[in-house]
Length: 550
Image (cartoon, rainbow, N blue to C red; front, side, top):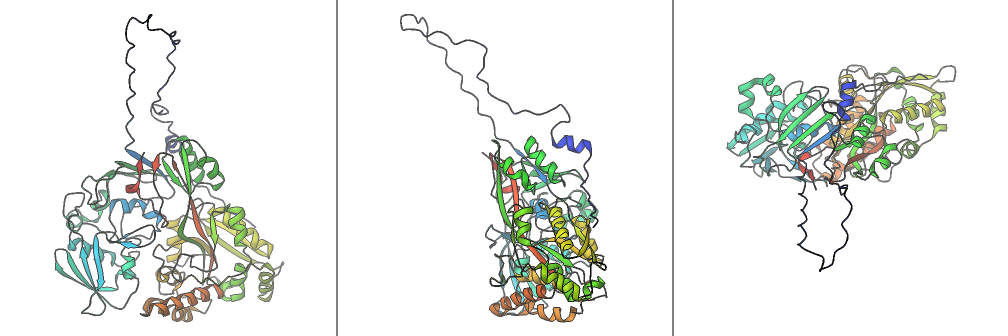
């Protein structure tokens, strides 16, 4: 067994900057001291007193901080709002600059946003009536209208954009007036309204974009969100300033900096040193210690991300279903959660987490290493002829992601499989998946804040989906057409009960045919300054607008 271990690189200057050791030195908070160096005067009596004591000076209250520094766990490759794939954590900076079409609260319930109301039209099939919130301004002072919403829909339909396949379901956009429009779809889509508050569904200004062009827009992005763009240094940081004319009211935090710190240990060091005010996905072995420090607090937040292993259908040994299933039977997920993640996870048997609409409560895929050995032997693999696989894994993107894969490699070794790990970033994973270059298996954290099965089992496995592993012409599983037929009702069935039932069946089908290996629902360790008030979201994104100092 050979494991390729790659640590995220950080140069000395970046590390020292995180620890506050550059410039003029370590910044210390002002401290009021009671040590004056003078001894206390002796007590006096009324007869001795010759004058009234001098009034005691009242200490001046220290002003609350105006800024927040986030030690951020992912690269920010680009500020492009629509073009590239992202998960929900990666959306944190973008949702600060641009408003989504619809908002979503911590209970995964959709709320009015830029789109105030959206409903199926009573007088036309496959048609949505959309009302846009009035009184919203972009950062450059322009008013946001239905024209900007329509333009944003149209841009997201661009060939090659990450979610173009979703938005191309809108075949016609009719402007009714300045704040109302009508969308016509090519077919019924029960999730289209949820998509308006999901992933890259962000509103950009039509007039400004057309004036400066795409390049100018990315150099100086303008949105209607609570924060304006100030500075972006690739590989280092993104700094945003509060937009005082934000339609929901100006943010309490006036400056937000996303420091790019892809190494989990460095993030823990930054929060402990006090140079970061909040961080996430730290080494869980440090969570309890850091949370107990007098100026810090920790939150263990279950999020709507599920760790899964994508199965490459073009990896020739996976033409035998017994091989695919053996790799799943060999994994003791409870042990991984208990011993590797130290409880920061919830084992799952399918792509559906407990909060999802299509969660099959009564289904469990068992841990059975003897069954794994049996299936591998039936498939012709022996100690002299072991199955050899390569697993792609992130390293530090999520808590102990790489260590989870190390544990999986050991579990596979115990049933006779030789596995090696290659480290990839999330952008690299997207590129490899989209170009049919996954080698065998690939760890990914699938985000589905909507809870709808379209955005979990369907889009992650439906062969025509841009997000499935079925790319190119090679399919050794032989199940591409059958899987397509099995998952199709999740997209089209209008009877909701039947649609959810079909999704549960589809989720079980995917697992029992070894087409994806679900591992666990993520529990995210978040640590912040004790006097920073912030309630995390189960979606996994960070919302600086909700933060304030106390």
